[in-house]
Image (cartoon, rainbow, N blue to C red; front, side, top):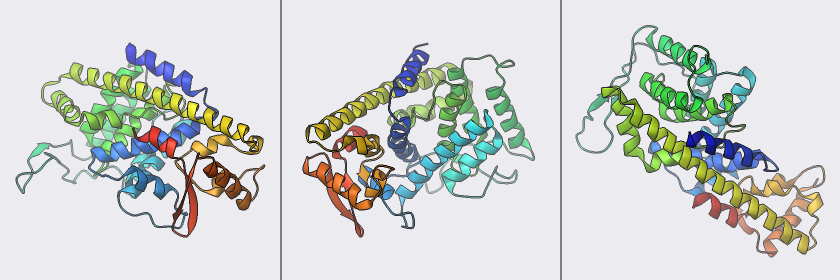
Length: 337
């Protein structure tokens, strides 16, 4: 299968990064933004990355907060997978709670949750789907879904096909009052990690889904209405293949940018050995404390190095709130095109 081969290529390429978490932190925000946009939660790239630069006690408002919650949910799920070695209902609930910032859990059987037609028109939107309900119904269906995902002896199906099938099943069950779409897309990535097709959550399907949003809902509806599984599976395999191409391109360009940055610093006799260069690429906005380490122990030293890089045209200095931060324009260009 083409998607499987390309996924293996991505996993191998990602392992050559000096610190894979760099790529996770940068691209995770792209996924969070795209996934939230599918749910009609929009923000600009600049607003999003500026939010990351706020002090911990700063109040982040609006859509950026929702998107940062998504990223935290992604890491919550990743850590649960690492600990549990399988997908569990508790882990899924934890992801949902992180997405929605709630203590809520599986929707109660009496909750009248329905899916309504998107878009403008009548004041009363048309109901297009009613998820299963009834005492213990959702819990039973989720247990069946988890058995399908975790038991490869009883269900010996290629993991990518399982992922596609399970994503539909999760969205059809609609286990939570809200946030099912974002939670379900995170689960796709977590399942690939569980099956060791990826080491870290670096494959983000939401951008493809956002660009092909109408087709996404049409294919989902095709299974519900007439059990048309093949178009849905082909759609998801194309999503994986194109997302892998996108992600490989980003990795190669970020690696090249890191190498160029190191060369410029060496040519200008900057103390490269004292600096953790990958930290300059964890996000476009860099605060002095991001550079601090065993070798760079003071804020003033970090500021000096950042100012030197700004003088070399590698960074741009900006004031946000009461402090100065430095902006990696080249990295932002790679992330946003």
